[in-house]
Length: 258
Image 1 (cartoon, rainbow, N blue to C red):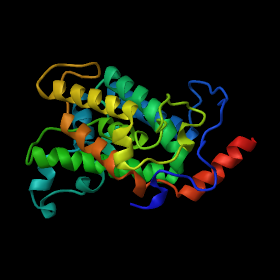
Image 2: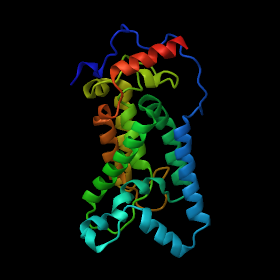
Image 3: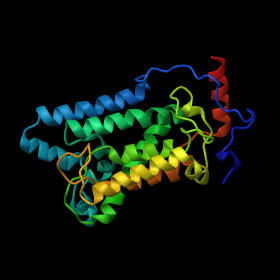
Image 4: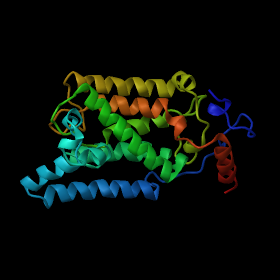
């Protein structure tokens, strides 16, 4: 891989300020607040304004259904075009949206600050589609409806593991975590914090796969496979969405001047 995977040129070995300034816990980027607001609005409309029949049509129109891709497109509408993304804004209950919203705030904020709004939207769309089609591949022809942002959130977790945790130890700090050098895949796997987090996350999905319910379940089958595909996309391919090392060096210099 390129040499800039683990280093920001021109800044020596110490790549973070000695005493990071304090950052409010809920100091979220505006784009992330907008996404959370859309998710909540969609849930409230679907729950309180739609009849049972309308809600069924709503799920059919915007939820991801693997069966759509097992029949010819000429025999159906155009829902197959947008549902690989729109399903990620739908949720099955308040617990479901609360669970995804909290993780989205935790991992979406540093990723968005690092790569910017346009790249973040692209990462959201790609990770939603990869998670959905990974699920469809394992459930080919299934007529159940996949909803929720869990696959995208998993991708953001995987992406954050490539930069947010200092390579030489230490905890993530919200004021500077997005400015740290991107670690290579092997460097990230050698990072104890990343390794422990990844193993615990995988264990949680294994428990879901064998039928042990966890917080965030909404009474239906949890698409643990979509979580796995999303995380792998974010972790393995984050470099495709990241800014250049030079850009991060300039931003870090400006951050330290401010």
